[in-house]
Structures are given as C-alpha cells and as structure tokens.
Length: 628
Figure 1: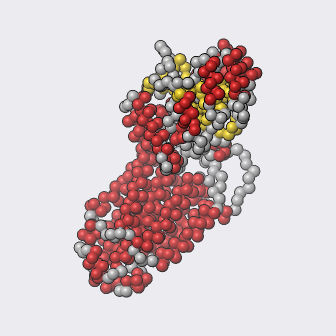
Figure 2: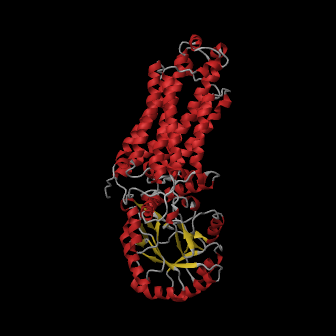
Figure 3: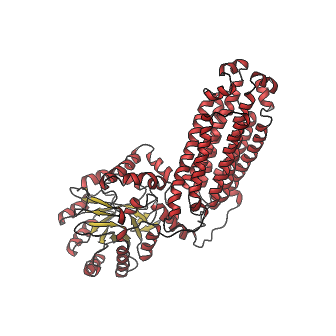
C-alpha cells in the first residue's frame, strides 16, 4: 500500500473500522502478500523503497541498512515482518515477547494522531515468536526482539530460549540484581547477545540514573527510548503527542551516558523532519510506529531521502568517468534514434502509407490494394500513424529520462528505460504469430538494440539529489498523491491496452469496429490476398508492443519518480503523452474512423493523464513547500 494508494483509498476505509480490526486486516493482507511466490517482488515493485547503500550504519556489531527502523507497537503478532522489512527500513523491533502472549487492546485517537494501548500491553508468545523467526531467515534487515517479563524466571527463560540468530534484545528497566543475571545469560551465547534497556519517554531519568550507571558498568550495550507515555486513567499513549517528551528524553539520556553509547528512539515520528530532530537530539537510530498509520507507508522512504541528501553532499574525491562509460549516453542515443525513426514513420504513414517492401510482400500495387477495399489504406494508416506517434513519444521520454534522470544517477530512471526498451524489443518477435518479417523493422530493431546493450553494460553513476526533500508533508504533496494515483492507473491501462492489442494482432487481427469501418469481413480480405491479413496483423501487433513499452515508461516514473520540483518529469509526461494521444486521435478523425467505443479508451487515457498531471503540478513543478 504505497502512499498514493494508502492516503487516497486505503486509509479512509481502514479508519472506518475499529482500530484492532483495521490493523489485523492491513497487516494480514501485506503479510499474506509477502508469503506468496511473487509477493515480495510486488511489494518492492510498487514501493521501490530500499535504502541507498550510503545510508548504511554499523552499531552493536550489526550492519543497519538505514538509521530508520520500525517500533514494536505496529505488529505485535509478527504477522507482516517480512513485508514491513521491505518498506525502506534498516531494522525492525519485534514483540514484546512473553511466555504466554496477550492480545493488544488498542484504540485509535485520530484527532491526536495517536494510539491508546490498554493497561496490559499486547505481546506475542515465546513459542509463536520462535515459529515466526524460524521463517524469517530471508530478512534483509536485523531484528531487535523486545521481551515482556514478569519475573526473574520468566526473563531468564525468554533470553535462553530465543533462537541463536537473535543478537539484539531489548528489556524494560530492571533492578541491578536482575540485570546482572540477565547479562550473564546473554554473554553465555556465542556470539554474545547485546542487551538494550528500554526507557519510557515519561520516565524520570534522575530517579533511575543509578540503574543506568550500573547497567553501563555491567555491560549493557545501549538504550531504547520507548515512545510511549502514561495515559489517564490507565494504559499508554503512543503517537504524535509523545514527540516532545521523546526529544527531551533523548537529549537528557545522551548527556547522561556520553557520546559512545548507542541510543535508539521512537516517539511520534510522523514527518521526515521529526526523525531528523530525534537524530540531532542524540539518537543513533530512530523508530517509526504510528507514523505509518497516520502519514503512510512511504514515511521511511521519505526520511531516507532526507538523510541521503545530506550524505550525498559530502565532499568526494572520486574521479569523473568518461561519458562513454555511463548509461545515460547510450540510452540518450537510443531514444533519439527512436524519435527519428518515429518521425520518419509518421511522415510515411500520413502520406504514402505502404512502402515498397510491403507491396513486394503482397505482390500487388497500392492501386490494386485500394481496389480490394476503398477504406483499407485508411485503416492501415490509422494503425501506422498511431504507432509512429507512440514511437516519437517513447523516444522523447527515453531522452528526457536519460538526460535528467539517469545522468544524475537515478536508479529508477534507468530501470524505467531498460524495462520499457527490453519489452519493446521483445515484442518484435510477435511476427511469429502472423509470419510476416518486416526486414526494415528488423534492421532498425537490431541497430537500436546495440545501443541498449551498451547502456546495460555501462555504469549508472552516483546519485546526488539536486533539491532538499520536504521535511513536512504539505497540501501540494497530499494533492499530488491523487495525481500520482491517476497516473499509475494510466500506466497500467496502457499496459493492458498493449497486451490486448498484441494478442489481437497475433490471433483474430480485427475487432468488430474495424470490420464495420471497412464494411467487409476478415474472410473477404483473406480471399482477396492471402498475405493481406498477415500484413495488417504485423502493424497491429507492433502497435501493441509499442503500447506495452509506452506503458512501462509512463508507469514506472509515476510509481518511483515523484520528487518535489521534478518539473522536467511533469513536462516530459505532458508533452510525450500529448504527442502520442494527438497522433492516435487526430488520425481517426482524418480517416473518418469515428466509432465512439473505439475512441473512448484514447480519450479516457488522455483525460487520466491530464487530470493526474494537473493534480501533481504544484508538487512537481514548484520548489516551495508549506509547513504543516
């Protein structure tokens, strides 16, 4: 559930349900999805949220892919651990774990952007935790296991029976005597487990300072500031109201323990700016919890973008590679080649329509072709002009994505061009469905394919963000999520249209509206010339393949490329989309093919594109950001 779907569709529906039911449904859905064969790939594909390698941090003998983690209050039953690990986080704290397990009594406080947890906090049983951990070997992020204990015997058993793979364990504050026994148990493992002490955001540090000092002396590895405070009359409050208390607690704790002791903190992180404040206050790692509920699943990614901006602008002595070693050079040439080929094809399709090698394949002249059916040439022109317009639009997007995206080191831009281009080249083999090998088409495909392969072999380069990401979500961002939703639907619609047209091209070739326009039947055309239907099928299948390539290059930037002040992307989508739709719509009017049912997808797709871009304009094209 990326932000463009969660904020616009899922959140309003889930907030109409009781908090516990909404949580169980959401976590159950994404957890079940992650367990499907292609589920993890789908989560990565929709979100593209993995942290940049430059954000990696090493603490407690552990590599954290990012300083941003998830707190334990989101998924106390560990239903969706694998799915949540793909949200761009660097670690997950799971639990609390108890011997028997307890249901979590939770209430949503929307006006405060908080959760009210009952007096008996929820927990997962030790047996269930071990079962879940045994299936989590494929996780790419480290886990911290929080233990919920009620006695010395319970805590000793919990620590002793956790799987050996668990290296980090967090506990609520203990007495000095209890702590000594716990640490001895933890040290008995090889390698030893690191024990972290949890301190609530409203806990009196002065009162427990002796315990903290003794803990450090005995070997406690670090501290977790739990982002919860006592609520009246009972229970704990988690969420935005805790933020200031958590900030103060981290500052005090950092002064108390010094600079070298690791501190992990949660507490009302609902915006990227909140995370940066906690890190500046002294936290080494931070945890998101209720922010995923009230702000959206994309919050860790937005925080990582802010961290990456600072990391990427550090001085570097790396030498600049030669242009020919970089992907953007070759993909730019490929895009330019497609544009030139598309313009030539458009000129031919709008005038001569049929080329000499088409006539040679048919064994008849253009005059004889017209004699078979007076509207046949117009029908072929409508397919070929639409195809040529799509080629020009896709080529333009390749050039813009290369110059403004791949050249700047944007991984998503490279993926968008490569996925689209390989799909387009693979569609060349659709000729096997109808038996007509267009030699000129084959020549152009082979020439451009070499440029694509050189681009694959070349390097992407290092990404350096040009604009500082927003620290707060403003009205322009919230409105753009609706625009992004429409543009994502538009991209999927193009893919669906391309798949349908390709299938038609290699099977039945004509739809009912085509035959109504030409006032004939497929059998009549085949009887007039056995090679006529394969020729038309070639055009139709090639158009379908081009729409598939166009679907990817419109969809993937909409999924992955939304960044503040990316006006180049906004204009590229507008101009390329307008060119493609204009070619397809205008030619229908030029040849008189005016079936409402046939034209509706084109007008509908163009409308989706324009409305989506209109809603996204302020976010993508302006640099100013309102504070909220």
